[in-house]
Image (cartoon, rainbow, N blue to C red; front, side, top):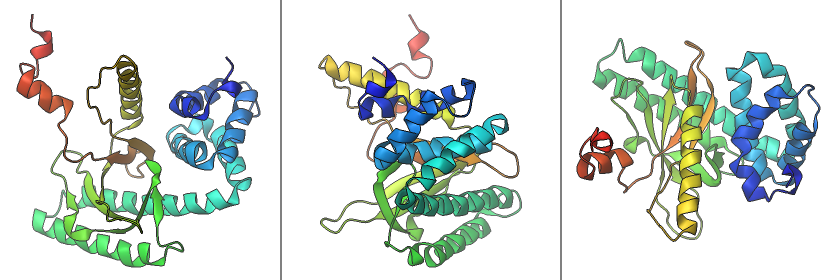
Amino acid sequence: MCLAQLQIAKLQQILLQLVQTIKFELYHVNPLTVLLLERSIQYPHSIGHRMYWLLQNEITCDPQHTERFGLLLEAMLVFHPATCAELLYQQELINKIQNLAEVVVYSSKKMNSKELNRLYTHRLSELNETFFHYLPNNSVQLPISPKIHVHSLLVDQCKIMSSKMVPLWLVLKNVDTVVTVPPTFIMFKVGDDLRQDMLTLQILRLMDSIWLNENMDLRLSPYRVMATGNTVDNNRGCGIIEVVVRSCTTAGIQMTYGGGAGGAFKL
C-alpha cells in the first residue's frame, strides 16, 4: 500500500518519521512533500496541526534543512488561512512561555526560591492579562492536541519544579460550555531535545495498540509531548509535556513491584 492510500489515523501515527524523511528527498518539491501538504490542508486538525509543530521544530533545530521546511510550512499556512490564524496564536503563546522558562532558568542561579516564585507568579499574571484576555475566540489550542482549548492560567496552582532543568509546571483552565472539566496540566521544559521522548512514546502507543488487539489491556495512558523549537541562550531543545494526573508511572511500578531500578536485570 502506498502512502497516498493510508487512512488519516495511520498517516498521523507515522508523521514524525515522514517529516524526517523529507530531509533525504533530492528536491524541495517532491511527491512526499506534496502529499503531506495536501493532507495538511484537507485535514487541518488531525494532520495540519501536528505538521506545523513538527516543521517549526525542525526549522529551529536543523539549520541545514531550514529552507526546505520553511517553504513547506509557508505553503501550508498560505493555502489554509483560517488554520494559520489559530496556529499563530499558539506560536505566540509558546514564545511567551519559552521566554518565561529561560528567564526562570537564568534567575534560579541568582535568586532564592521565594524571590523566584514571586517573579514567576507575576509573569504568569501578566500573561493572563496581556495574552489570554485578548484572544478573539476567548481560547487557544495547545500544541500537544488541537482538542485541548484553554483560556487562562490558574496562577495559584502553577509552580517551578525542583529538578535540574527547572521545568515549569503550568495549570490551564479548559474551555467547556457544557460541563465542568478538570484543568489541563502541562510542563514546559527547556534544555532537552524532546524529539527523543516523542519517538519513545510513539513506540509505546504502538505496542499498546498491539496488546489491545490481543485483548491485553495494561491500562496505559502515554502522555503527549511536543517539541517546539530551540532555546535562544544555549541552542538546546524545548517543548511541552502533558502531565497525566491520578496515575502511576512505569518507573514507580518498577520500584514498587519489579524489584527496584535494577529488577529487570536480575535472574
